[in-house]
Length: 298
Ligand SMILES: [Mg+2]
Image 1 (spheres, protein in one colour):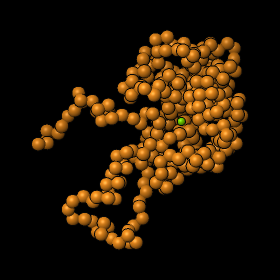
Image 2: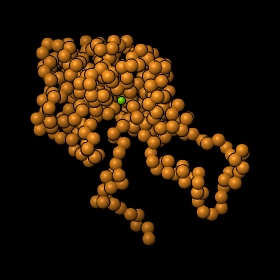
Image 3: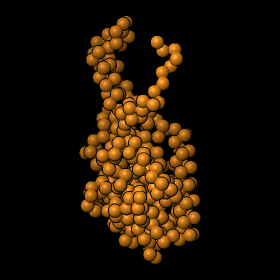
Image 4: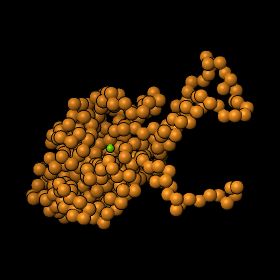
């Protein structure tokens, strides 16, 4: 988990602190330091949207309904191939691991997929801090009860379990914090998970935060019929090529073989707070062919 603090916000903040705009100054600027009001903290627009809006809740519930319906349908059909890309697979040669007669499973990321980290996100905001690995590790150990199930997740998981499909978590929470992580999931109502069996953590297989190794390990015992996350890396490591700019990631996600998987085995939930999706220069997001100026502008 990594929190993004927009550089522009920092720049504006710095400018406000050191160089007030020209013209008459508001009274507060002239206050003596001891009279100055405390710095106001506020949620970011992304936090307001994700953690506070009815719109986000509705999208989550819609998506969880879709996930559960898909899993129920696949459980009845009993496919013989999983949705986990085989080693070396490409968009041109998309191969998936075979299932044999292994039991069915659905694999979920944890953070911002099953649970919202409302406690730590609010703490970072109140502290005026960006992501801090030591504080995050503390959160993994002690945050149980302050991480909440994402709207729709509990109903969705209960339908998936009722269909006879095992719920497995593949998360980049640390194996070193296994007890706290299990307790956090239990306290949020997600379930009781067993490390190495139904819960896979960073450090369980080589590759750091890359999750393919853990997906292969899960596939030794299960036929995975759904992958769910909030980042493309929750689906396959091929999407995490660091050389890809936003347009390259977009193109890879819409390659015909991969495009056919969204909503049909591969599912993503929205996360506007952090991750590789939060990237792009002015030209990348607003390319020249889209340039438009108001007609009233001189
Ligand atoms: Mg996540």
